[in-house]
Amino acid sequence: MAETRSTQTWQNWGRSVETHPVRIAHPASTAEVVTIVREAVAAGHPVKAVGASHSFTAIGATDGVLLRLDRMNAIVGTDVATRRVRVQAGISLHDLNPRLKAMGLALPNLGDVDPQSVAGAISTGTHGTGGRLFGISRAVVGVQIVTATGDVLEINEQHEWFGASRVTLGALGIVTEVTLQCVPAFLLHAREEPMALPEVMGRIDELVADNDHFEFYWFPHTERTSIKRNNRVPEGTERRPIGRFRHWLDDEFLSNTAFEGINRVVAKRRSWIPRVNAIAASTLSAREYVDDSFNVFVSPRTVRFRESEFAMPREALPHVLGELAAWFGAGHENVSFPIEVRFTAADDVWMSTGHERDNCYVAVHQYWRSDYTDYFAAAQDIFTAHEGRPHWGKIHTLDASYFAQRYARFGDFVAIRDELDPGRTFSNAYLDRVLG
Image (tube, rainbow, N blue to C red):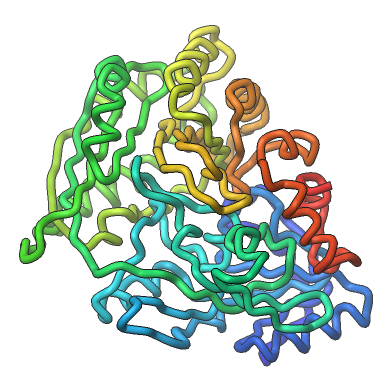
């Protein structure tokens, strides 16, 4: 078991949270996690686990014992007949996706980045987009959890706690292994193009219904968007990936290198932002390609930022975007990052943002060197006025009194947490706030 004494500050990817753990451990197995948890409890230390540290909230923060799950990165079992794959919880989506492809398998949906660990992605409700599809946690059919007593709990579809186990917020214990229901590997035809916001909103029902995966990016202070339509192709279709130069130009230089430079400048010259956004949006051009699903879903993201994202009923979308546009128009703040809009179908996962509701998702971002406080607070006020549910790994200031109104099984989830972790071994300030 690799272990070090913590002498440095732990920070998340977005640099929005930092802590000073008393101990950092890198377990490689469930047995090692059991030992660490029992030792921590005996010493009176809380325990938290992190994967890629990609959450923008303090959901994984601790000044106690921090488990880095990077060594728990193996595929531990595959059932070819049922297409079920069991993995250690620390394996990243970036590493898992090509390994699934080698077995002729894929996850049915993904978000737009892939550094997250499987445990981190499912525990915070990472979702992706698709009007008839679901978040990643819906593919979970089994979870192994190490409890506060050091016991190993196996939860499957027949277990009474299954609904609580697929999005745990890290509150029930340390997720150590996950069984995923995969689908046959598939290609996606990607079609990306600019479209004016009024046209997008006028066609929104059609665009969501007629595409397997639909999303769009709206450039604040403009009526310009970039839309993405991703659809499965017939078996036997050949891959036609983006050419190397176009990939470098669009996805590496323009979307990352140049965008980083622009944000460094406008962070100090915020009055320039509306004009810069208009210019940036006007440079967008259409492109189409066919590639493996995970290569289409995932985009490189090297520009550091902070993010807040809420799920709302789909019918709220025109009102939400209209109220955001009015806030920008009132001159409160100039924002350089596009606003991302996605969609998913209702699911049965207790603490999923999609629980029993078809959703639109609206995500707001701020460059990491800029203060996000006022912007995110204003956005949150708009989102919560429309029954918004925040992504558990993205910034919000809401507490248990709010979530008790928004989640039908909130009380049941909290009761299971009270039973499994009465001493709050796995708690922290964030969980105390959101769960009570």
